[in-house]
Length: 184
Image (cartoon, rainbow, N blue to C red; front, side, top):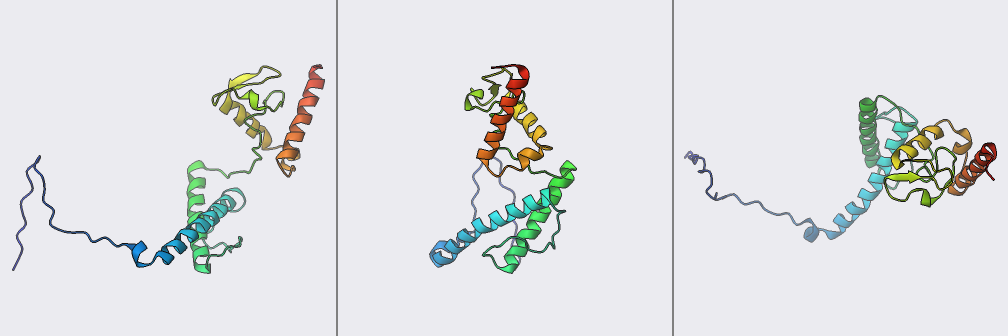
């Protein structure tokens, strides 16, 4: 016997839904498996991020790239992470038409792009950059982007191992700027 289709409901009236959706309560069925999946998710996302960074900065995206990073995931999940990361990196490169380059960003938002003076007080608020020494004032994002641009070709800064070395180099550059400008 063939079921008859009901006509469309009249707009503005309430509808009666007769089909029920059953709820699958995964937590009640197997809480251990759900906890294990949650732990794997964090490891998987970290691994994907490592491969996206690799594919955007050092090598061409390749879904069949040999595993490079050590992980506790199975070989199969490792392969899936590589494939997903390659897809993300390929999309990123295609849309932007360029390769990303790693740049040391430490203190780039606090450093003056004119005199290299580094101080938290150079940023009175999120939008404004005003150097406490030379008075250079500009939008904070513009100042930081100029610093990042200069750091692209800065081999001396790239050789720095940590934040302390970067800060020491910037202090040294500020002292040199003061000497050149004739400041005490």
